[in-house]
Length: 381
Image 1 (tube, rainbow, N blue to C red):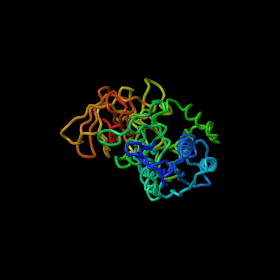
Image 2: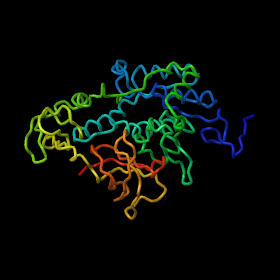
Image 3: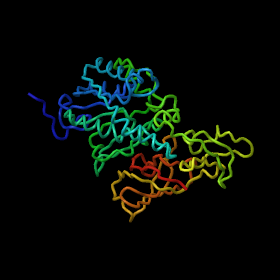
């Protein structure tokens, strides 16, 4: 006879039924984080199904170390599933990944933007296609190894920064929709350090307990964006001029894709005061440079806004919030002015350097941990 849990008694995933009757799909990259999530839930008695995505050519992946979703990582995920005795599947998402993430990355970069493909991967692949696969498998929820927290609030599930702010991944998950958040679980978000995660991996006897963290974007070997773009878009790289703010030619470059906003080194225009890349003019194949103070940005527009706040997002109300314009920077005070349901203007109370089109601007509650959504920076001025 099945065990009946009273309505007030919820299991650790928030369901009023026994763990054995709660199916959870775990997105497994082959790293220690998602492996610990799967092992912990399996030990607690949940009906765990591990799923790993093959995101690009398997032969190339086998030779690529230091990035998630490579061939060896698929093998590692399979070993963890065997160790903890739960089923594991590898899904070929190569075409989806190329169409939804890699092509967008290449086109954005060629347009002079600084794309963040990990956000697009979460938004368009993991939390859309994989999440739907989890539902097709009759799973009650999907769990990941992301360092972020999910709490039940008065208005429904809320997204919060991880307890360990040095590992917080909220910047990469701002575009999570409310209905997706209702289905997702993040069992590692409350941990205070990565060492706690590795200690759990050793406790479960996982073969990946001491596996190094991935450092690169999975399809960008050694962090060389330009090399990837040249491979994806042959002939798209054209040389041009390096000019100052007045249009005076200071030198030449071999392609705008070799430069990023805020870059100082490698410009090849030595002499005089230090100069930084302040704008990329892809239409005219120009790299525009200027003094450091020219990098400071106070106001910029954003699009594709995803709002996770409790109040309405409309043009009749300003929101005094904090924002991150880069994942490695702390939140800074800002004013968010909605223009439409998906567009807004952000004013930083203290201007920041190196704000670039294509980056994400993520919203946070003032002096708190709650993530209020975010959007994509359109242009800067």
